[in-house]
Length: 128
Image (cartoon, rainbow, N blue to C red; front, side, top):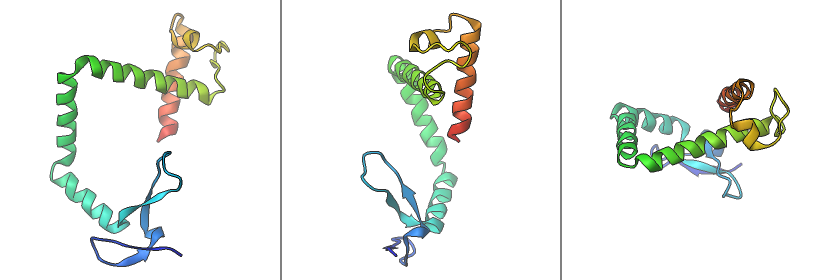
């Protein structure tokens, strides 16, 4: 079994005691630098120092400074989310069976718009 050294507690532990990191660019999964207890301790300390608020403040600042780019990123995220939801059902609309992305996602009828909304909500639910 593989073992790894945690730089925080200085103990050699089994890799099962480390969180895994997954990235499609990597050929294999990698392990976090810190063991699970140390990682949780570091995350808690970061949160208590106001780390989350700083990240949100920086994101809001960037959004205000780059409104057009922020809108474009939001549109792209919406489109990608909708396409993932539609592809989850075999690339066809649940209500009408439309298989062209423009027809499914244009929202020109209330049924299509409702189906897309439901697919998005389902996708968000499944993503958790």
